[in-house]
Length: 81
Image (tube, rainbow, N blue to C red):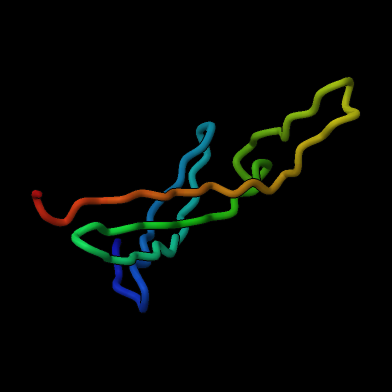
């Protein structure tokens, strides 16, 4: 589902990772300039909530955090030049 909110849209739907799916809402910010839309979205994801074990290396001496941020940045032409 897509809903208009100030500054952009709220997009809701399932996010599936490694066979596990959860519904979430992502705020997509939209700016328009000279016939180009710029879209930006960020959503935090807990890897363990989806059954993914955070990576570790060097026999566990270096561990990555459980929380990661999925980012989207895009530009879309709104008119044909």
